[in-house]
Image 1 (cartoon, rainbow, N blue to C red):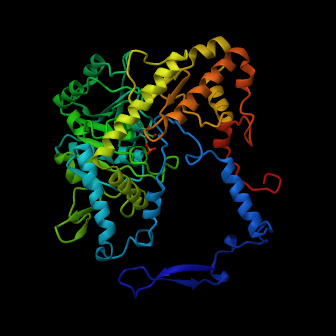
Image 2 (image 1 turned 180 degrees about the horizontal axis):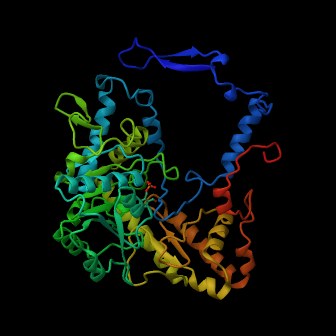
Length: 484
Ligand SMILES: Cc1ncc(COP(=O)(O)O)c(C=O)c1O
């Protein structure tokens, strides 16, 4: 067996050499007693196997993926190509900063860009997903109150009922009690209930704006004043930042802390909760608590800000500087867009969602908030179809696959029964969006006339109706010749 050991010789830490470990040095229960049952196949067979597998899969490179809240948008190939340059890809995180000035310049620039778009005073890029950014943000809320001697007393975080599940989860992980605030019939926060829940125990409120109900919270300045009035802080869940990019900044709405899901706004890959990137930003008063490392620039060279320079930090979320490959992709994308492109992101994400929403409404679909203009995503409720034809959201979702469209987000937000949360994103064409609308209209007609067709879908995929809950709970990924 070979393991790799870092050589002492290179200052860069880049030199690694293989070291052979005799089998006798390994614990006996770790030793194999029979031959590995690897299939005996040629290269050509392997290539064909994996190519076929990749073609069976739905992916953003091949299909429209209108997942509301979980945004899947195209990932420009140039971002991958540049992030894969050997100077970036083979950089060793332990190497001296003098070897990494180019890479650090990119990270520093990204910090500056994110400051500009959020209005925050300080940014740390290290959280490896939106949810980890939330955890970091709430940990900073805690550290801020503790530093002011109010850590014990301020033990409540307010979270609207429309929030993504990771919001209350992050608050609980940081030791807070969560108080849920109801939304009103228009999808805004119920201000009366909010007032009722605020007290000197309030550490902060976590808000997504536009919210996961697909509408912009119109009372945000009132909410900000109310929460600040009792000494609480405002946390901005930046999952939906693409809807307001270069139009309004979280800081201007009164937020003190923000996380940004780079995979949602800056078009980086989103691999089911990671590996992503969820940088956090804060106003001046919270800067001492930002997670490390960050990049600093003194006009001549880039240096790492670590625990030594930043003693009140909440610490590290990832061992090194976060998912730097993802950060580089986001940086390249942001530079490609520039300020003008970012304005178009907000305009097209909202235009596309509103176009889709109005077309679906005209075709007879029920909207969750028919009186509101959508932000970058909209919600259709299939409550009527479920009642009249026995065809549920899950059936629509499965049937869409037969029409070659990935389903939108289903059954989230929980507040809206039988819902489809649809986000066309700013990167899709009208033609693609029209195709998706037509598929939904066709399925709606099928649901009325031959509900069984929709209820038994999909028909055209390698696997039919799966028990997804069972698949998640009893994962079976063993390869067999029969299955291949
Ligand atoms: C509103 C909202 N907040 C937070 C998150 C968590 O982000 P991540 O998936 O990057 O952990 C999501 C994810 O979809 C979300 O939609």
